[in-house]
Structures are given as structure tokens and as C-alpha cells.
Image (cartoon, rainbow, N blue to C red; front, side, top):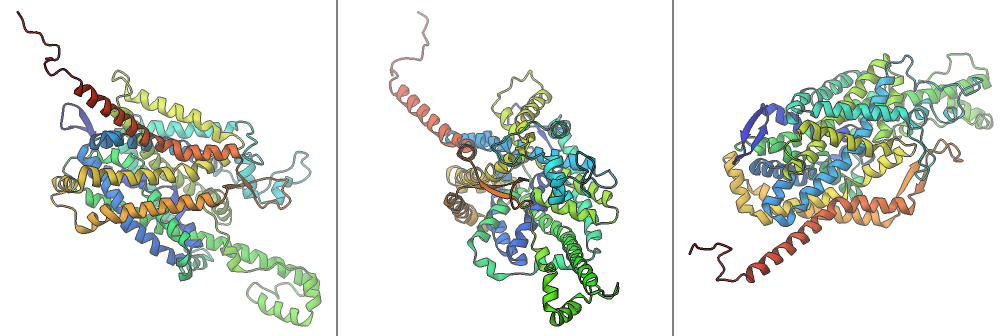
Length: 610
């Protein structure tokens, strides 16, 4: 890791090479959402039709914001707080807001990595622990909760989370989760111990390994029975869904959050670049690779989900075949999965009452394919269930969770950098304290705060943070970022900045997006999101074995005190923006009034010798 002079006396670290910088930015942008959120949105919003609003949002909202952050960080060579302070002190709170969001996101994001570690450690067992129900306390049969649901659900909700019936019942700290959480934070600290010097080395693995695993999964997944059904289901366009405004809103928010703009991490990363570097090409590379990864990940994911649906569909048919064979005393092997429909139609026409009395299950492949899931539901329930059916399940489980950990870890680098760089820019820590100690203190504080996620109610709190910390605050921050650069620093000045760095001025497309299209889109998305959220009281899904419809999850409204916390999570990160602006205005008024009251004949305390 080299050092460079920062237009002044203070030295600033720089990347060893361009590949290291790009891999870090790509690793930060490409995260868990690319694997478990994008395919889910494609599935529920008309398959290939969803790509239209997604690509529109990428071109007119995502890429312009990404370019703007990389360019302003590289030109001013500061972290988020330094950048916005230098443009105008009135928006100094913008950097503080970004760092608060990065901190809040990192504490719950690393909890997900702790869950991934827990599953990774258990993936070495044969058989996999989520493949069968455990015995009850008396060793006389299987666990009742597990029998009512499934072994996969039981391992996730009971063995992993030991979840409480609702968010108001906190439960106790789960010691195994505390250990996994501590391990996850130790890994983050080790990778970050020397700042971008050690992190720059780690990204060679964390940013590239997921692509290797996805490729291995792709080759294996497309050979599984039912893979074609999954892919057809995913990419068959349903153009009617484009009439639903929610589709456009979700596409805009997905591309926005997927690129990790407004966190401050990308500004910090680009500030370690040489001043003359083609940041436009960097933005296009990072943005396109990020979106291409989402598409690439969808293929193995839905090939495997198609395999799972086919397996479930065949199991359903075999259950019905067994009932028909036994009741009508038909010879074994006469009714098969392939000729089941003909047999069923024949028997139903001949003995309709008898067939009806058997209460046969309704087996429809489309129904199994419709069982969509995203987030933790996809990773820890649906996908783990599919892995059980794959030959060599331990190997695939290990690969899958190592991939998830790599994806999450590279995203954590950006979140931590978004907190540490502003701390250094504000000079909150004396220079005598080494950076290694500052990083250790930050990781320790984050670990202690994140202990709330290891309680029995921890999963509910992760959902709260995941849903609200990275929503309204990031949209507000991004909107003010564009205003700061384009309308306060000025489009003309910013164009000259880009000319100085790249050798050419931004074209009409970038200017149109920065000046009109992107801020308008951000404002529309923000207002629409707030309106939709305000129309109904927020609810959450609980896992309650005493619920009469168990194993279905019970939907409950958030209690008022939790709703108050949700409002705080939306407001507190961005409250620094108006507070700092108000404080700076007061300081300006005071300074101007004090200058007006100065005695024009006073020489500022200098006395001539007499």
C-alpha cells in the first residue's frame, strides 16, 4: 500500500493498483441482496418483465448517482464528511448521516454473517442437521414442533434462533449465536486491521470467490431435473405486472440499494485514487457488473428452486399414487408419475365418489413454483431444503454458505470504511492512538450493540433494521448529495472537475440525469415509499407453535413502542442534516454581527511601540 500527498501536507493512503480498487467497489456493491432479493423480485413481478423498470432505474438513477459519488470523492480526496463540508458547511450533516446509516447497517448485516457461520459449521455433519427431526425429550418419538412444520424450519427457527412468539418477548441471549457473532466481528477486524492495506488484499478473495461458487452452482444446477421449469418460470414475462406502480417502486429501490450509494463507503474508496483517473469508466464497470451479477445469480438460484419444486411435485404425486394403488388394489408400478393424470381421469370418471373420499392432494407444479421466498427465508429455509435433495449435499451446503459469507464480508468492508473515514476526517481520535485500536474499538462497540440480535427476539429486530434503516434515510441522503454537487458546488465546476480527472467533460446524458431526472426520480420514490408505508400500520411475521394455523407464520402489528423505534430509525440518521445546517447558520449570523460591531479604529490588539 503506497502513500500519496493530498494536495497538502497530510499523506493519504492509496490503492496498490486499479484492480484492487475496482474489486473493493464491486465487492461493496455486490452483496447478499443480489443473490436473495433480485431473483425474488423477478419471480413475483412477472419474470423478464421486471427487467424493464429495473434497467430504466439503473440507467437514470443508479449509474448517475454512482458516477457522482466516485467522482466527487476522487476529486476532493476526502471521506463523506470532508466532502460535504468542503462543498458547503451547511451540508456537513450529510456525512454524519451517511456514517450513522453505515454503522446501523453494519451491526445487523454482520448478524446475518453470524447466522451464515452457524450454518457453515453445521454443514460438515452427515446427514445435515436440518434434514431430519430430532427426538423429543423422552426419546419416544420426534419433536412435536418439528413434525408439525419441517426439519428445515425447525432447525432455522428453533435450533438457530430459538425464536420467541413475538417481538415483545425478548428471551435470553443465545450463547451459540453470541459466539458466532463474535467470530464474525473478529473476521471483519482481521481483514480491516491495517485499513485499506489489509482490506485491499482480502478483496482479492472475497470479491472473486462468489463468482467461482456461482459458476460451480450454475453448472450443477442446470443439470438437475426441473431446472428448466425454474428458469422458464423466472424469465417468462408477464407484461400486465408493469401496470402495477409497486413494481416500479421496488425496481427503483432495488437498484438504489444494490449499488450501495449514499453509505459513504464509495466516496471513501474513491478518495484513495490518484487524482487523474477515469472515474466514469469505473462507475459504468461497477454498475454494470453489479446488475449482471444479479442476473447471473438468478440462473443457478432458480434452477435449484425449479428442482425443489419438481421434487415436491413428484412427492405429492407419489403420495396420491400410493393412496390410489392401495384403495383400488392396483398392481405396483402400474401407476407412475408419467401416467398419473390418465389413471386419475379414468378412475375419477368411473368411481367419482370413491376417488373423492380419498381426499387426494392437489398436485400442481405451478403452485410449488409459486412458493417464493427472499432474504433469510430463501437462504436458510428454501435453499437449505433444496440442498438436502442434491447428491453430495454437504459439499453444496459448504460452498453456498462460504459464498454468502464472502458476499457479506466484502459489503461489510464498505460499511466499516463509511464509519472509520469520517472519524478520521473529523479528527475525533488523537493521532497518538493507532488506527488498529480505533478499528478494534469500533468493532467491539458494534458487537456489544448487536447482542440485541442474539436474543430470542433477535430475528424480529433484524427485520426491523433491514426494512427501515436502509430505506428513507438513504433516499434523503442521496437527494441532498445531488443538490450539493450539482446546485451548490455547481454543474460548471463539477464538469471542470471531471475534465481535470478524465480529460473530457460529462456528456448531455449525465448532465440531464444529475440536473433533473435523478433528483426527480429520487423524490418520487421517496414520496411514494412514505405514502405506501403510512397507509397501513407495519406488521411482521412471527413463528408461534401455539398458533392455530401453525406452521404458517402469524402476522402481527408492531406494538406502539416498536413503531416509535421504527420512526426513530428513519429519523435519527438524517436529523443531523437540518441540525448541522441550523447550527452553521447561527454561527454565521453571530460571526457577521460580531464583525459589524468591531471598532474600525481597533487594530486587533496590536500595539505599536512608543
